[in-house]
Length: 214
Image 1 (tube, rainbow, N blue to C red):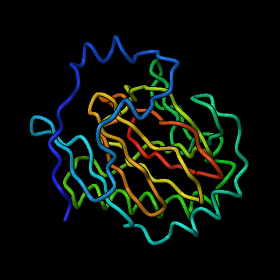
Image 2: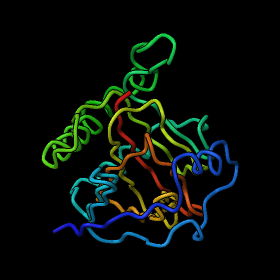
Image 3: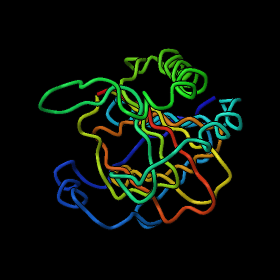
Image 4: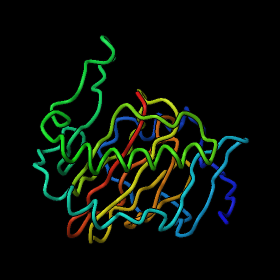
């Protein structure tokens, strides 16, 4: 049974924009009060901000082996490497078709990524958290990110991490919470409206998957 966690933001949205928008500094342990390590649901003014579920995906090891064999390139969004699957979206022109990573890795897309997305969508549907479809998926390898909001996204995003690694905790500084994602865990969160970023470094190999709707 997931524990309900009432959130008490440290500041308003306006103050958060002044503090974290465009920041080049990584978040630290000073940016949160609670490290979520068990099933939990966080709400604010009746709105779900996150759902954290431990060890709910059985295929983590198999997915990691397949994802680790992919050809990654240097990330344009943070330190590390990444791939972009699904529909690429341009704010001026709208959907621009399949990404090159989608076209170049059809077997991984069909046999590993699509089953994971179907499973994530089913989780969203069962929790009644809005649209259960995704347009885009980012697969990051040992990537670190400074505080940011995914302002082009709609609804809640699904996040998972795979591999044998230490570090890479994800922090939501305004909400004063952080998450230590391990293989098989699922985090569903309001990344479109809440600032989030990586705490500290990542050691060994960590592959994270973020599925969202643009």
